[in-house]
Amino acid sequence: MGKMVYSMSFTTGTLLYRESMTVAHLYQALGDWDAVREQVIAENRLQMRTLNSSKRIVREINSRLKLLTPLELAILHDDLHQEQLYVLWLDVCKRYQFIYDFAVEVIREKFLRFDFALTPVEFDAFLNAKAEWCPEVERVAPATRNKLRQFVFKMLREADLVGRDQRILPALLTPHLIAAIRQDSPAHFAIFPVSDRDMQGWAA
Image (tube, rainbow, N blue to C red):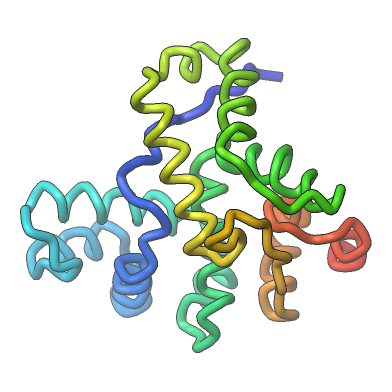
């Protein structure tokens, strides 16, 4: 089994809801990620101030959305805003294993212990623990560490998984979303603050 390598380049954007919805709907029409990128840039669909910003953001969104299954992508075209937010949290976690592991090893574990207060200290402790055996994490500069923490906490708030008071909120997954994630991988349920009982029932 190969050594885990973390990508720590997740400060291009947070959940990017508006931008992701624009790209997802365009992909539904075009069915080709390269064509989507070209049209987004040519027409400034993301309403960015500079060409470089548009290129950087659409590249980031494409890299996330490509990891979703057709069923998960289809949820972005439904009207349930909360479902859409959860799918975007899922695509972030699938894109960045570091965030995935933080969600599973810290957030959900705290939720299971009925410890709902998420603090910056816990993110820093998690990062320091990973730095002991991941050179790419160990090399992260102190200023960048602060930015990484800010981005992850903002993503969690945007996904309605953490409140403004930094308390973990239970995820309320719909049957539609449960079916989509189950078909992808039942293991992905663990990135949400949900009970073991729910996870076991959904995976069955």
